[in-house]
Length: 224
Ligand code: DX5
Ligand code: ZN
Image (cartoon, rainbow, N blue to C red):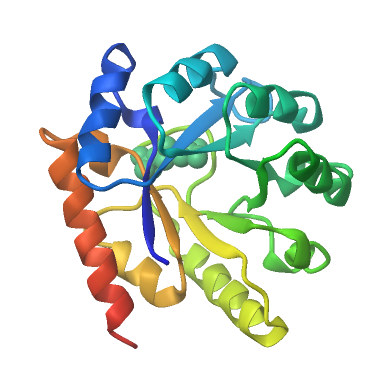
C-alpha cells in the first residue's frame, strides 16, 4: 500500500495544527515526526510535549523517527506521548533485536532506519521482526537536502529480500523526495514515502500532498 508521509520538520511549528489539517483533509493517513538530539545528528528538533499536543490534534498514524543516541531510554516515552510506530537507527542501537522487541511490548510498531553509508546486509537478522525498514536518502539531520541516488539500489535490494523471504515489512524512504523523483522511488520498491520540504515549503501543502500521492499511485501501476 503506497503512503505519502508528510514530515512535519518542514512545517511552520507556530501553525502546526492548521498545517496538519491541510494534509489530513487532502487524504494523508500518516505523519512523520523527526526527533533529533544534537548528538546522533548535528541538529535539535522537538520532543514528547509536541508529540503529545499533536496526538490530541489529529487521529492520523504518528510515526516517530528517533535520530538520537539513546533510543532505548526515549522510545517508551514517545510511545506514551502518542507514537503509533517508532523508527530507530541501526547505527544507534547496540542491541537492535532487543530494542525492536521492547518497542513492540510497549504497544507500537517497530521500524529500523539505515543511513546512506550503512549497507542493507546489516539488517538481515532483523528483517523478520521489522514492521518497516526506512532507507535514508540524505544524511540525517536536516530537511531540504539533495536526494542520494544510491539509496534506490538499497531499496531494490530490500524489495528483493522481502520477496525471497516472503516477508511483509514496509519499505520507506526519507530525504530529498520531490514531485520529480517520487516515481523513481516507487519503481524501486518503496511503499511509504516521507516528504517534508516538497509538501510544506509550498503555498498549498494540501495540493502538494495530493499531487505527490497521485504521482506515486500512478507510478505503482506502471511496471518497469
Ligand atoms: C532528515 C529527516 C527527514 C526530513 C526530510 O534527517 O529525517 O524526515 O524531514 O525532509 P525533506 O523531505 O525536506 O528532505
Ligand atoms: Zn525523518
